[in-house]
Length: 368
Image (cartoon, rainbow, N blue to C red):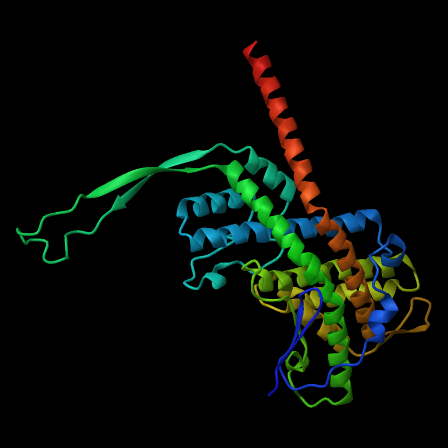
């Protein structure tokens, strides 16, 4: 079997795990264009676009916190790890990292596990330092041996030192990680159109020759970010990013179809389909977004009667095509949002300083 890796000028790679013919240039990508998302093209309200960006910013914080926890495990900084898990839990987060022996299996693979990125960061920046005493217990005796051997002398029972967690410093590290991951995601989101093309190619191939092969195996071109020299959770983060993006695009399609009475039936059908097939989005499984879209593409044509007694057709494949279009457009909009992350952090620091000034004013008034 031949494995190919096609590298783009952006440093992204398209891996082909089996012997395949290179796909022809996609008319689909040409149809939707390559420019950034504008309100007219995306047909999204400013509120809806901001809602999607909020999901993105929250996910970016979640993956930055999980990356910091990953580093804590790697460098055996148990005190800081425990503090950060406790802090996140107090904000309603499930355990972001577990106790599996394999570190990559420890990291929770879910999106929307952490919400409210601004409040989370502001509170961490203003949290008090914590100090605790660490006791280190040495081995029982030199060279082991029987505990009753009178010729072996005991080592000192234990020693201790003070360890301190400074939340403001942890917050700065998380901001740096957020900015680093944001740079990766601006590249990774440019893979969305390639993945859309591959999903459509795979579906067309399965329709032409249904040979009973599992749908996942027909995805001959596995679209993935580059490996090496990147953040440790990049591959998993890309999978979660596709989840969040697919959910945002689905919501956009439903809202779009809901606006017009002639297409409202499509919105109702999509809501029912989502209610039946959205379960995996709440799990820790991989490739959930791809599975959802391929299932939607495979749905048969639906025929029903309108309230006025007229026959009406619904083509799930057309809905899937529209979802993919909006996925690509929203991805462009998210790239814009990710490029603003350093500015977001500057604004966050300014707000923290304003809060500090306000706290000092209150304290001064209380003393008087």
